[in-house]
Length: 215
Image (cartoon, rainbow, N blue to C red):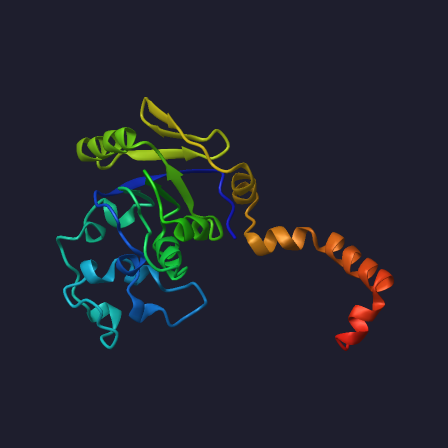
């Protein structure tokens, strides 16, 4: 997993509450498990004039010019600014894969769906919770300066826009894992030696358990 320390990018403002994972990535695209290629279908139902068309080649589909991801400078954005309860709904991890594959490294919102929030950390995407008053301030700045890049520093727990800055909090364990580029599996593998030592001790102290299991 790609580590996260600092990032700067164009903000994609999405001023809607309760954006669920089916809107982020519709169900008909949940057929792969290799994490690649989902960015083209991020917000597919709104992004194209032929939503959900899985038969037409991507280069032949008709983009919706009114949707923000098809507009400059947002088509090259890498920080998503959203409203409350972003990523609610089903637990599909593919929704985060789609954001990441599009190039989004940070999502800023007042609150997130719990499973989506966890999936972000396991895929190198930083979910930042800020108060609604600060979120509204960011939306206003986006409207005035759409080309301005926002800076995010996980080491300092700070978001910066020009001379403005906002602090955020992240669970310390999640923060350290993201700084190191470790998902849950990576964290477990770091403890592989201790796990092996524990298993060896159990075999010595309670060998009948392993005999009964045919091991």
